[in-house]
Length: 460
Image 1 (cartoon, helix red, strand yellow):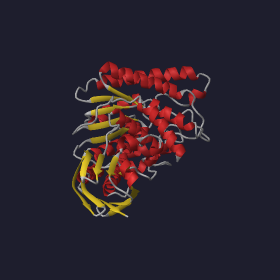
Image 2 (tube, rainbow, N blue to C red):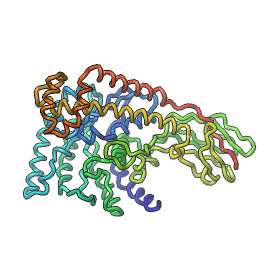
Image 3 (tube, rainbow, N blue to C red):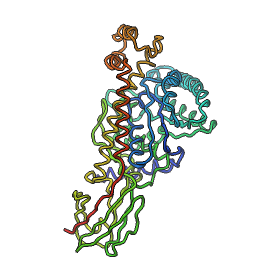
Image 4 (tube, rainbow, N blue to C red):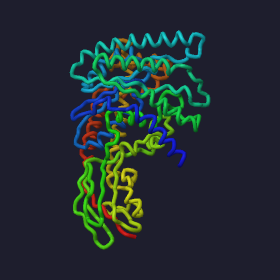
């Protein structure tokens, strides 16, 4: 535990100084679309970001959309802007690319340097075509998002490193930054801080990586780091869920940040009060979700100071002596001594609290929504990754099925989506799934409102 804490302190130094607010927070009614490749398509970072808004801003209705397709380069993204991304009507569009653009195996060939230069030039040329289109969107905020890195330094069994691949990616990210500055767009980078974190933790464990066993696709902890870095760029570091301080002797509220404290009572040696927060704690999933995942979202706390910086629900009570049992709405949360309570305890770290349980329901609904949205991204892959080249974009007919069946044995990615497409080909099926997502989002914004909680500190 001591080692983890020391490493976490070091990581604070790595990521805190470089992150002033560079991306405006989302606002009421925003439709935030994340355009990307498989890291976005199959990943959770955008969903984790939306979960923050769902719990921190319960009255702010926004929509966050997965606009990723596996295998995409900037060239591929440009081809689907109209039929896919722009049809989502984004008010804010995050653009990330570079992993596939930079190439793979040739970095270990005889002409690695020339190959890297070629892929960089191709990527920039393709991005410039998108750049022209983005300039035609005066009512859409553009955010250039430097991609998560290819991890060249982790020791991963049976995985040969593509040497200097991330150097090409870094050049692409730098061009994105220049484009953002030139066009008056916003920019934030995930690459450099994630490389720094990887290298920091690899000093203790050479196999550590935030980028998955293939060095490319972050696991859930890596996606939560990405969400943390994005939220940090939006200026949310240091924003508390709530901060409460009560003087038990005087039965007075000393501090009530982002919450309302009322009805303070002292009966014998016990103290109670009513607590109405303006937001909910952020729930961290402890299950490794997603195909091939080995780590959970909650593993992020070993890497970055998310709890300290963005998930702080502090309860501080002075003027007590001895041991106290904490109850919220008659639910026993735990036992603390007076010294601990005087220092302050973080309720957001206590999964037993009723408010945390309320947030967990939101998390599970959001995860269910994510799963449904993924079927639409698989459908989009079929359309733009296969049928567009066949002249059958959105044909959704028997001819499309026949052409697909002629190619499934030659394309394992197509084969894996055959069953899904046979369902999504029907408009009624797509409509039903879309309606189900709408129901889930409506339910989330129905149950995400904080309610008044009865807090009791009972002397043991």
